[in-house]
Length: 374
Image (cartoon, rainbow, N blue to C red):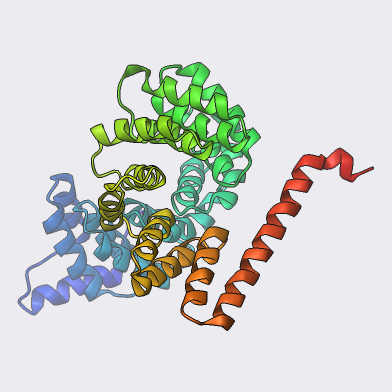
């Protein structure tokens, strides 16, 4: 960034001095920066910027001084004033993006880095753009940038992990698995990579491999969510005793693990254990967005003839998981008992539609692409 300033700035400093204000100059502001006195430097740059508001460089320098104090919101305001005056100031665009990035505002950071990243050789902007898109959960947009960067820097583990996770979250499971396996060969004892590889394996219906990876993650001690993952796979396969044991192991290390509480509560409900309600209610307090909690509480309330409460629970379960046929069916039965025939028929129609869609999906999965092409 250039440090030459216009005659107007120097004249403004002279006017301030003649008006009795303390003298300040860009050189003095720079000297304050070099001493590490960023608060005084910011004050100096603000004085200069307000005295010569048309010079974008002064607003940029003010933003830099504020950012060094982690006053990112104020820094963003200063950078935006600079870019209003000079929209194509690449260094200021970078500074703005970094301020957003450090606040965790990745969507705005990505927008700021778009133009600098197009400049040939600006690798920093390219990396920050890719990581900002990843941080903003815009995985599809992040992938081409991450692929290019990973190819150029194959030893950069942060970029490789972001790319692999982007594949995972965009359901490109085979690509994700390939990347995770590369990472695992480089660091075979990484619990995090084992956990991510387990997700890819499970999504590819390689359940046994997923469990193997989860157990590998646990080889050197407790890893958050690993016992829950093993338990969830067992629960999904209706091996409820094994599932309960794994959920309890998760809770032994993480007593406030809402998902483990929820699914353990479901297992207890299935075995008619009276402690199920307390477990489910505890899960609901910790996280009100778990569908199975509300479905199971609705089942318990319906069994206790608490119809109004059961209806609210089923409706909440459906709002969270609209494709859960069981919740629609149970709500339909409740409507029937209340004499709400039209509402009951509507819910049963949804159940029928969901079952038909599931049947068609199963046929397609069984037949496979070769059969469909015959």
